[in-house]
Length: 262
Image (tube, rainbow, N blue to C red; front, side, top):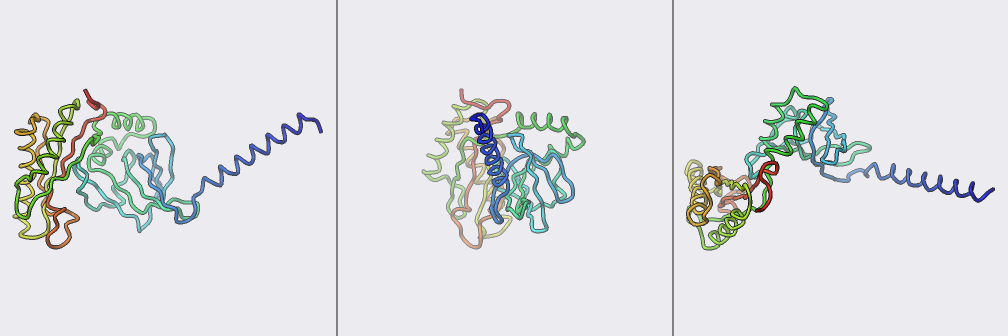
């Protein structure tokens, strides 16, 4: 056997070993968990094909145990349960997966109300047309949170504490250094007291933050979005909960239009 033949065989063996390892790694062990984010390009019954930002297609399976969550608002801290019927091509989703045999079963799928609305508007698009639309969706109207502050309040109060004012001054400083910034916020309460009063209190808290950012933080009114009062926080539990008496404030930029610092 010549040295050239031996070299060729060695090369072939190495290539076969690499291929074997690659095929072995392609399948996760049962029970392995993972998360993917991408946009739906095809739905066939319970089989959903999701393409991620690297243009890699993932085939996932939805089951009767899959939960669906629709996030509301730019802060993304409020959500409502949804159904499998909300899934459609063009919708950007985050899917929590668990390996089952050779399949990836979705235990939970979440998406934003804004993405759902956009996907419905372009529902007629398919193939390259849909991909082009999705690329434009990624470039424009996609908000990136640069900073998040949770402003906490005393029971029944909408008065800003010294710490809250310091935190908001920090956010305002960063906002003024950021091109094309916007500030969004949602107010919450704990579960004590009357529901209608709690809703009004959550609005009052959010407006107190918005007013402070404009009058004391020096932010332009047009850059501070109209705040939302959400009432009782989803994680409030029962009784008094200091972490639920808050306003969630986010400094965001539109990545496609004005993202980036001055």
